[in-house]
Image (cartoon, rainbow, N blue to C red):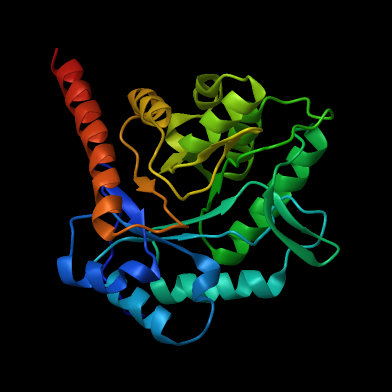
Length: 288
């Protein structure tokens, strides 16, 4: 069967941005040089309509990443087979470069909570999650990436450090990792942990994408809002992560209080500069 779209992979030397309705027309006019565009998969589950038409239009010129928020990989509920079937149909239609989902739970008893809730990091939960990731990959016929989430609470039952837990999910299932640097930093500040220890636990060969986003400082701690510029501390942590992992397809997320496209492109340009600097350093080291 002939592919509907040309094969496209994200360029690890440049950043991508989240594709949001507010930017459709500006992106189509300006056609900026971006590594890839990412969408929330569930927003495109319909079999037609203007949003899907726009996505197909952009897919003709860009690599696309499908990023899920509703599969609830860690839930005790059975995997929602209809949700998974819709994701499979969308992936077949768009032919994305990447498909990802959060390593969390967001439903119980058939009720969806509209929150990405953290998991207890235990051997029992690890086995449960690995079974579900393997099942999802088998149904989709492709590797997925799993993303670390912000955790505003921690479980007393956790016995495995988060980085080792995420790394083991990837090792056992063959899935990849979507490293959210902002989430790693916020967790380290809110819970007094070491963000670089989390990153160091990951096998660089498994990290297929990086997310950067902004947040908010509150009286109770840091909150991952995806509605502000990236924190300076997150840029610094991203630079350290890239120094260890090498250049990885990187996305700037901005999902609420969405600014003009130029603001988002300026954030992506900051990521471009860090990626370019890392590649240059690696080239000098290889030539030495």
